[in-house]
Length: 231
Image 1 (tube, rainbow, N blue to C red):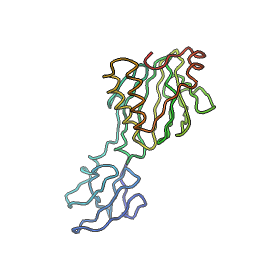
Image 2: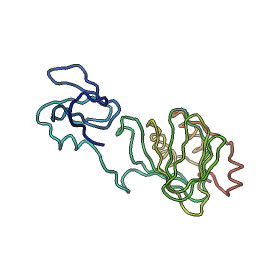
Image 3: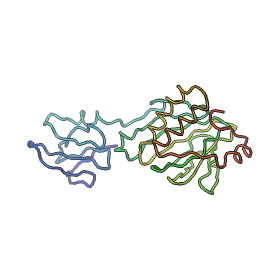
Image 4: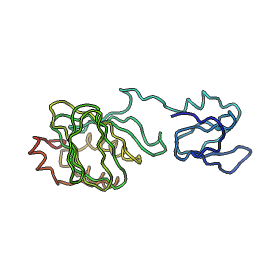
């Protein structure tokens, strides 16, 4: 995050029509505030929203006050889904819906149900432990510092064969799928039994362009002594 200095004719900003003497700008692909000849173009009202210079009283403090520039390690909402957690770090609203970030702590011996996304790609950065993954016909194990690429349209799954806990940093692009996790937390808290949870999860997945599959489950659970989430 940051502030652009210099001319306002930056490729990240689009000049709009003048209205009432106030020039309006739209933030297209950035989480930055434009500056024209050293003056703040306006207070950042929300990523992807229109911003305007309402008065000369806007200050750098007001502009920067609208930006969250640090996310602390223990900051953000967290939910637990019977074997994997979701720690919400950066929401799509903060990035113009270009991407969002969550972290996944994973219990040893857990397999995430194979699934396929139709709207977003995922990029997993391993923070802790060793994480197994199958993406299409390819299978690999990744340790700390490694990335796992999970493109949309390709069936994939991942797991923690143990013996220690694992943690992933998940980049979701474009943003939006973090809202699936948020809603799934409510489903987990309110489902009467595992069967209802699985049914409601599938229904929620349809809303977010996500499909589940039983493919690979028997093979992977047997080979690595894994259990599906919730078992």
